[in-house]
Length: 236
Image (cartoon, rainbow, N blue to C red; front, top):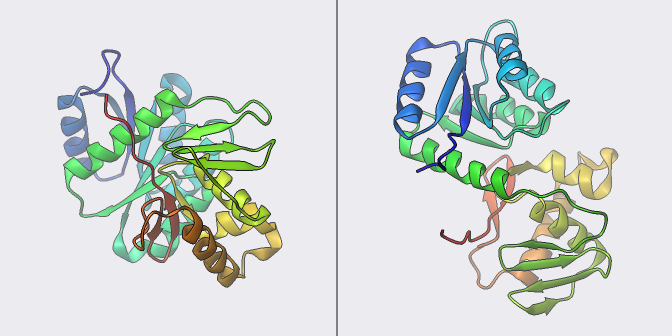
C-alpha cells in the first residue's frame, strides 16, 4: 500500500474505457487520480495539480505522448510511464528519448502497472540531489566519482574511464529504461548515436566486471530499445 499521504497520479489517454479502468484500479489501491484526454489537457492538469507520477498513452489528438514527455521534461523530473501497443516500437523509443522513464506494452495486467507505479514512487521518494562529486550509493554499489572508485558489496572493482562513465550514468537512473541513443550520447557525445556496436561492446565489458554470474543481474536488456539498471531494493 502507498504511504499515508496519497501519491497523486495523472492518467493521460483519449480512450475513456482505459482511463476509467486505470482510475478505478489506482484509487482502490490508495492513490489520488486525475485524468486528461490528451497532452495539452495534461499540461494544464500538471500546472494546477502537480502529480507525483504521470501515466500516458502515446497516440492521442492535439498533443501526443512523445511531445508531452518533452514538454514535461522541460520543467519537471516527475516519473513518466508510457503505455504503448507492440506496433509502436519506434514511437516508444522516441518517447523514452524525450524523457519517459518506463513503458508498458498493451495489453497489460493491472498488477504489472501497480508494481511499476510502486517502484517509481519509491525511487522518487528516496531520490536526492547529487552534490558535486559526492559518492553515489545505490543497491550494493558505492560509486565515488571524485576518486574514480567503485565498490560492489564492499569489493572494489577496477573500471576503465568509459566503463566508469557508463556505470555512473546508469546507476544515477536505476529502474529507468535507457535507450541506445541516450547512452551513446551520454558516453560518446551527440555524434555517436549511429554507432550502436560501440555501446554493445562497452556493456559486455562492464558486465564481465560487475555481474555475479553469466545471466545479467544489474544491466538487463530491453529488447530493441536499450538497457535498464536493475538493483535489489530493500524491503521495508
